[in-house]
Length: 285
Image 1 (cartoon, rainbow, N blue to C red):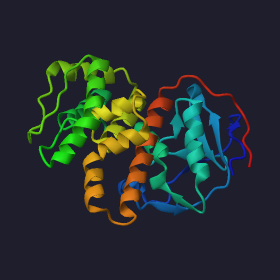
Image 2 (cartoon, rainbow, N blue to C red):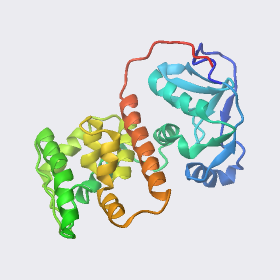
Image 3 (cartoon, one colour):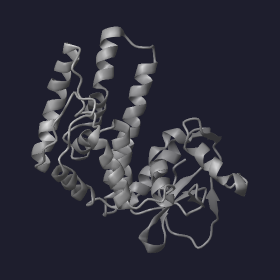
């Protein structure tokens, strides 16, 4: 039960890690297991709360025990709004913890542990690689129905981002894709550099989900909704489904999962950029 959303920091209380049940030499494999889509664990807590710790950072408490990351770091987030969102994920869990539904928690763990040991510049470089094979830029030359659909649905987004950032992107049906001008890459690199490390973690996650820098920025800039961005990223698949039908349940499940991950990534970008705190309040059942 989410009885106390905000509690005064106590000098007492223990720290809990979801991985303290793993032998030390198996820590890496346990961390990988945590991040997979099959990772579950029996719920071991009742109350979820947040508290403000050292340096103004916010901590997540499960039955007054402080949460830790897979890497053993104290789980802390930069502001109250993100802490509330993460705590809500934990509070929403029922008898079984389904970690694969806890996207904000996973993104926080990634930002805190930095398991790939990359700096922000390296993250930006990795994200910009998607521009070379961007979903919106890579077109087909047949069948005619899909060609027309891509033009009608993708061209307006492409024109928007070219005008928004004063760049040239273009599209191509060549297997090599369009040739992106270096000036365009430099403009996007400069823009992505304005994000802090946490926000860049979320943005890169969204880009990998949609396989598109253009759709991701369109959504983060609120030109597109989550539903629109996801649908546009799956345009060819949706065309084939309308033409040939789909496997029962599989299509809807994949769509909802992609929406959930994309929405969580977009929310993470917004919340990790938030500097103000929300009003303290008590939430009860």
